[in-house]
Amino acid sequence: MKINIAKVMIGEEEKKSVLGVLESGMLAQGAWVKRFEGEFASFNGSSYAAACCNGTAALDIALKAIGIKEGDEVIVPDFTFIASANAIRFQGAKPVFADVRPDTFNIDPKDLEKKLTKKTKAIMPVHLYGQAADMKGLQKISEGAGIPIIEDACQAHGASWNGKKVGGFGTMGAFSFYPTKNMTTGEGGLVTTENAGLDAKIRMLRDQGQKEKYVHTELGYNLRMTDIAASIGVGQLERLEANNKKRRENAAVLTAGIKKIKGLTPPFVAEGNEHVYHQYVIRVEDDFALGRDELMKKLAEKSIGSAVHYPIPVHRQPYYQGLGYKDVKCPVSADLAGRVLSLPVHPGLAREELDYIVAALKEASP
Ligand SMILES: *Cc1c(COP(=O)(O)O)cnc(C)c1O
Image 1 (cartoon, protein in one colour):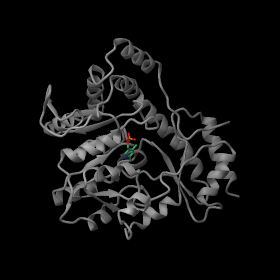
Image 2 (cartoon, helix red, strand yellow):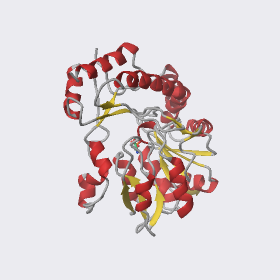
Image 3 (spheres, rainbow, N blue to C red):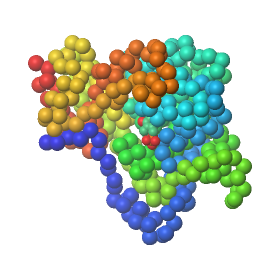
Image 4 (cartoon, helix red, strand yellow):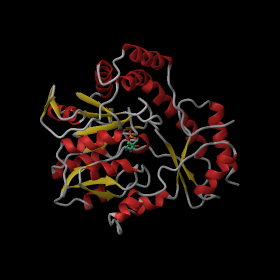
């Protein structure tokens, strides 16, 4: 048995529609992108959705659209994929790192509040691993201080809190369709919003700042999605909810087994949250028989893929160290980097494979 940490699942529908696009000769942003945007907006309960070439670009133009610029500060969790923070740097602004909660792994509103300054111009929560951040706490701060929220929903397609989907809480939400995410377009991204003006701005920024054909009113990029990618996205979106459900079922099997193993803590789901398990992440506690990296090796010996998301807190990355982020206080983030472990949870897993993973974990804890 060999179990991979992720599996890209492309359906017959996507294969057919990609061929159709190729045969049509209309490959660039066109009718399929428009259709994909419409279907994603309707799935997400968002008024507007604008596609682009990847999730990093989606975050980048969302921040640009609300006017983030040099001298501004944007608060972002220290425990995330580096793209969240880099998007802030692309605008010349300063990422300010807030700590995360040890249970949900998401940004801690209490620490965020301490890091607000007069220069704070946006808050960027990340719905890490597929679970919504504490939107109640964050919205309270956002409303109180009059600071917009830009959601990094790149790992949380379809995740919700109190029945409302992520990407719909902030001024804008950014999604990624990288192959290992819960749905893919090969590479791709998308920005959701309720604001028509911001949607129009995003559409200009992704396409050379064009207001109308060959009339350019802004310094825009070329960040368009292709119709090839969008045609994959349409098929993927149709299966997203079924796949998310399967991920939750797989997670429930893993959790039932892991709960009984001393020293391993299964994921915690906060009240009101529907988790979509982009990653199924356990904590390897100090009283477990092995350290996290040793446990990974044991699993690898049994051909079980696992991964660490993420081994280095963002502010400790060489790039940010070079910028002088020396005494950032995010102790939970630093602790988690040494103890989190992502186990396979993808919808392609069979029951026997899940049982095999739990058995391997049990065996590793004498
Ligand atoms: C994947 C991801 C991104 C970036 O998306 P890309 O499509 O790879 O550019 C940003 N933030 C988080 C949290 C991600 O997981």
